[in-house]
Length: 237
Image (cartoon, rainbow, N blue to C red; front, side, top):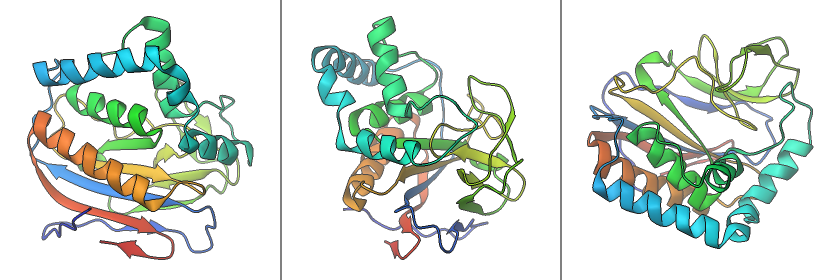
């Protein structure tokens, strides 16, 4: 069961715009004073190796999750400047199938990728010190700059579901994070968002947030400062 952690410092607000009827559920987690590293420790190597084996032996189980189906319905329900209709978890599964291994980025990113593959959920992680004030989930007005990882900077169409801070687009929920607030080896404080949409249960997001928190704390240390589940109707603590 998820526990709520308060925070006495410069606390950001997570806001889902009124009238946003997309069944959006956000698992919010802040961890500070972490030690990110490029290499995997023996524990992570064991987890990743077991996951890679399971993906290759039971591919259909990972590609036919109810969560992926919910994301596909969401993606197909609206237009986007991004032509790809692939979800983040499916992209990761296909990387394992294509390369025979999950690319090694950093311990923080590895933790995110592990839980995303296992749960079929879309996850964002940002450098907290590069996020300017509040994070708002809303539909784009059109013309906002978005610079996706593994892509060129584009202008969003009207009506795309995004997370933004006071200055920039942090992610396109149907696709992936932007390059504006990336986590690097030097990052000390992170904001994690697990994003569920219509068709994905709150309990699934809640359990994934718990699992990701435990994995991060075990491999990059740090301490949890904020943790909660947010919808446009209620905040579950």
